Image (tube, rainbow, N blue to C red; front, side, top):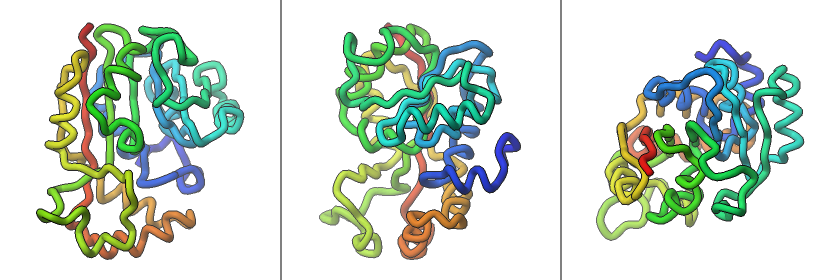
Length: 239
């Protein structure tokens, strides 16, 4: 377990399966150096941003659409990191050169944990909305929830999951995500495989008293370890 945070802090700030576990795992495949500028995309309440700043001494831009920048900046100040983490409220789907809270080629790395599937499940997304802002040679790390195997033919969802399934969930297999990212003109994949932290990340989420976690318990009991995983990807920008 990450020793930078108390269990109470983690339980109070999780917005889904424990993103810290997923971030720690994928960051082991990166070459992060002190002083690098990193975009934590869809950072939620900023736990992963604090982790990046503390564990690697990075300059972090913590961007989220649903959490107010003022709220996250207050968290970063409370952690003594207001000089190393900048909170931004912006919609990544509207981000393009000339219309973003930062300049092109701003970042040495981009990290996105348990969020990219909400907005990035199209072939044009990465090159249009993210690649322009990553430096040549910059690193990319993305972890998304998904499926161990495709649903049965002619079925949009496994019957046992149907009561909880919603349009736009965008849960896909490792191979599906790999094929999507391979279409980028700028991203060279270095790693695309199943995360080893799926079970633990879900268990820690389900054990907390967040109302959404309580709601998810019935779904995960029905899923019974048969379908869900996380895909982790790392890559490098060539442009």
